[in-house]
Image 1 (tube, rainbow over the protein chains, first blue to last red):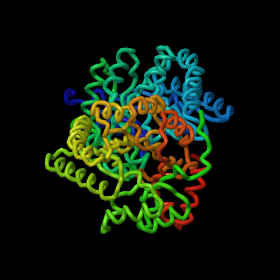
Image 2 (image 1 turned 90 degrees about the vertical axis):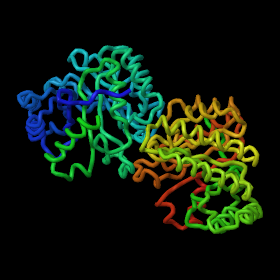
Image 3 (image 1 turned 180 degrees about the horizontal axis):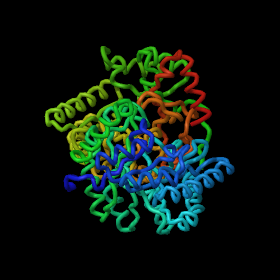
Image 4 (image 1 turned 180 degrees about the vertical axis):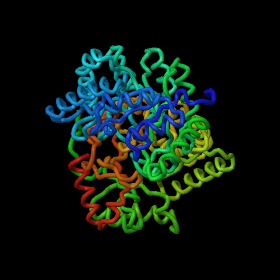
Length: 277
Length: 277
């Protein structure tokens, strides 16, 4: 099973962090000039900006705002920190409204000072607490399972099965999941669980990049599609089989690519999108 | 559920690689002097040694040889390489016999040049090919699932569910699994799958160490029990509940600890074994 080659950029979205050396205004102009159609905004890109005006600027460049990254980080051994996290997620919902982003991606969090089971419960409670705010604001929430190598501090949700289970339990049209090939490509249950996303009508986002061999940094050594071991095209075919017709979002943290000229890097992204995605 | 504190060293085994700066003879003497009762031998520790005599030396130090590390690395896109891998596993079986090791741990392998599904099939074929040799030699084989961050090159078997499935499919009393907390601690199915090991009577080995926060190297930054996020005691309780009464094997690859005086490090291992395992 393979997906049709991508011959145009109508479904290409790029995360602001992918071209981190650019400010969001510069990213928007360059993305637009190259024909990119979607942008996912990281909250750090909005610091010292008028968020509403930034949203207008992005749309004026012809960019669809796909999501705001990121909410989450719910678990903490201390109650005060958990409450602060919920407040911060409510703030993220307000920012999404101002920006005009229909979706917030949740990097759920974990606290190595407590058992994973506790972190998992707290994630569920945290999402439950913000569902009414998100629903009232018309903003959806996507649970993003993260690679097991991030289970200590970044996310206690480490498989798509877990994310699907949690979304099903929460039983709200506001809550779905985000599938990122980097985090999930190794999982023998991936095809089955992507299918399950479709059955539950809650596949809200699809992120792509590649796994470098060797990977030299646990966080900042993601590859461009085609650089590494991930069968991006095959996973895209599974995603499309669910009926998903949203954006394919390029999310790359890479010390190597951030050192390059970002205009050149953007050309590489577009080439990799068309040839290896 | 927690396991009883370990008050003596009767079940403590240490891997030769854990104190890598020592040659195997020096490791054996030091382990023995400190009261360690088991040793798992890495094949690199046997280079330029008479293997049979080395086995005698270890036993003369009062050490039980728990296993030989490691066989496996079956998958390869090229057929010639797969055949060479099977030959090498047969050599490992001979070495285990010479050494007097009753078990070989299989790091199953992966080839990023082909789909994980192909690597998984080739692992199964590889193990099937060597079962008759292992059975004839009286050597058992333990499939060790490795952390998903090693799915590109080291192992396409990344969960205990996969290892259990494969052991059940192979349906041979020669084949079981090895549970290593480092690789599996994050998995929400871990308790269930450890129970399944017990039901199938194929839990052949139990390896311990810890996951450092932050982890600075994908391979060589393992922690001592108590250094990090892994609930070693809780997982040991699950393992003991299956009826497992073998060794608890300390397997640590650590640039940090290898730089220390190894006699001091050995004292730390024993302390961590008693207090945090």
